[in-house]
Length: 582
Image (cartoon, rainbow, N blue to C red; front, side):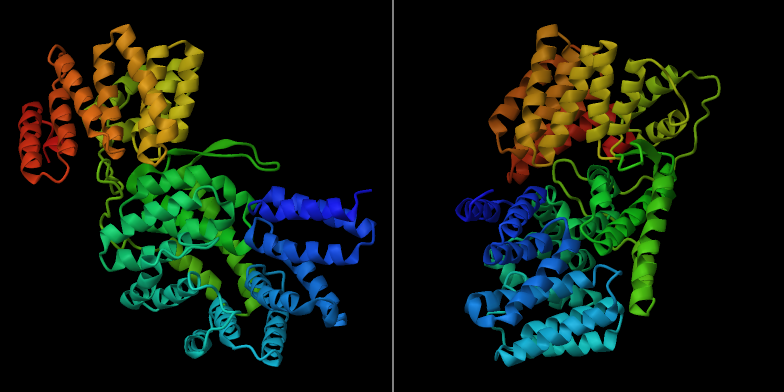
């Protein structure tokens, strides 16, 4: 049996681990050994750590048992534990009550009972009711009692802060959420600015407040702030499945600001997190915002587009049509909302989910990148006639259309191809690459699938080309560490094989990534060599694309940028491609 000293060492190790499964398992293992050895104080200390670990991790439903047990142990003999434990338990009431609202299995009477217990203990300890008022507001807002929410919000803001108040980085996040829900966007932004200006951080910040600010920024036309908030917050959220609710804000933002392509990228990357949502409430809200996004894409005429959904439990991994997945997530969100409403005795959560799923755009388009701006969902183009064409012929036409900027024709081809099957891995790889290039599903999964199919079919040239595209995509998403080696390897391959056309296009993408990394000198050298190669090739699009890429080399030199743009325009006018000219 482990000694108390060794168990204490493991407890210290667990405390240093990030929130997640590994931390939870280690704490549970130490608790099991402590209980077996009847080390009651050690078991108490482990449970105190579990409260925080469960509340901040992926297993929020587990927080109630250690909290109730520690509270009961403390009440039996307060003198045994001291002031520090008393303070931590009072703080933990916020974890418990905040979690209670997120599980419809817990009755509203239990929630209010915990609130009254918290209020009594704070009053008896001589503490400010500041935190109590905040959680009274939180519960009132959750059940849809707007008058009570307004009342408790005002009392919360008026009460003095003390050591049991939420940290100065987190406190304004809830205030921004309240003000935004009342349409008071300017006030919401004003409250957040001091926090962002001081660069205050904690486990949940700044990603939480930046995510909450996306909607006020978008509605007030602050495109630059919205773009920066999205990019900065998502970098922190992309590895934190416990923050699914914050991620939902980003899906909502993309769906309503003309960035459906970016939204689909987030959805496909994180849809698997829904299966392990840390609470039904977080899962409900993420599903609703994804349903909104998929509705927008479906209404654009792309409902047959396929998206990969990973398997879970008895559900196999499958490629689902956008429309079908949207319908499934809508049903899921409303089913969860109904459970909450039954518990709360209101229709508030169902109404909230309906408002989310039916949300209208708040901006025509907020560009998320200077180098590769997103686009609104394209208007549905007239359907071409595919009668008599083989799958290979349709793929060929789609590739030509996409290369010349005719995305509508390429999307129409992909809708036709979604209902066709083929055994040729190279042909299937070309279809997957087309999906990635179409900028509708984010591209990453499609490009990886295409690379595997090209490898299976022995087409190394196409494999290197699609890996180069994948590298460019990763580099644009702040993933240069993974993306740049892929692009450099592809360029080296085409230089070695003497494939000048592929070298030019790979150089163009690599130059764009280098500009993002502020390596303008290497980007200029790449474009110089690519321009020399293009002069000997029969491709009317290349000269304009190369000239357009040089605009990014100009930095803040407006005069040089105007000259470069004028040259690109002149060259694109030779091609007659209206989209590129525009």
